Every structure is written in C-alpha cells, then in structure tokens.
Length: 91
Image 1 (cartoon, helix red, strand yellow):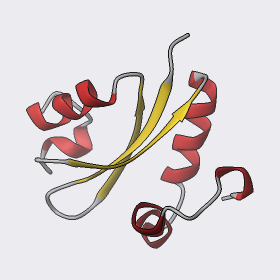
Image 2 (cartoon, rainbow, N blue to C red; image 1 turned 90 degrees about the horizontal axis):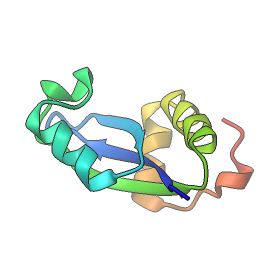
Image 3 (tube, helix red, strand yellow; image 1 turned 120 degrees about the vertical axis):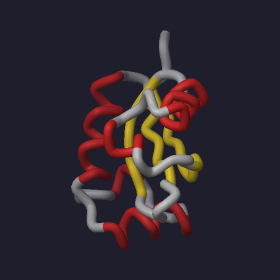
Image 4 (tube, rainbow, N blue to C red; image 1 turned 180 degrees about the vertical axis):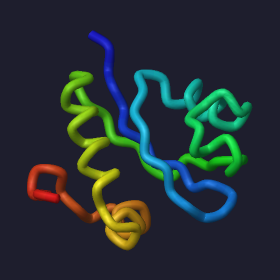
C-alpha cells in the first residue's frame, strides 16, 4: 500500500509551504526546479523541514488542510519543537 506524506518546506523568503505527496524527495526536486506549486516557484530554493507519514490519501489531505489553516507561529512551533501530538490537535 502506498504511503502518503504531509510535508513542510521553508522557502528562501523564510515563509513556510505545506503540501502532500507520496514521494517527498521527488516533490522537493519539483519545487526546486520550478515545476512544483505556484507559491514556491518564486521562492526557491526550498528546504524540507518536516514530514509526517499517513496510511491513506484522505488522512494526509485532512492533515494538510489542518496545517494550512494554522497561523504561522503554530506552524513554526510544529517545525521547531515537534512536540504536538497529531491526535490531540483540534486546529
């Protein structure tokens, strides 16, 4: 069964971008070549700062949407401290 990943990259302007994929390394290459998300095209290079693995695409999509809805400080805390438990997060 294919594993899905939610990832966060730090862009060259220090912004954070959250996405999902089944091949993290290939996706980072796409972002850095300019073939990734529109947001990252003008913010290259990007550096991978976090990944989370999920069993299904649905789980990964839900988590991606959750993180994308967070304010920057909450995303930074997730990246820097990695102390939040996915099961306890409500948004």
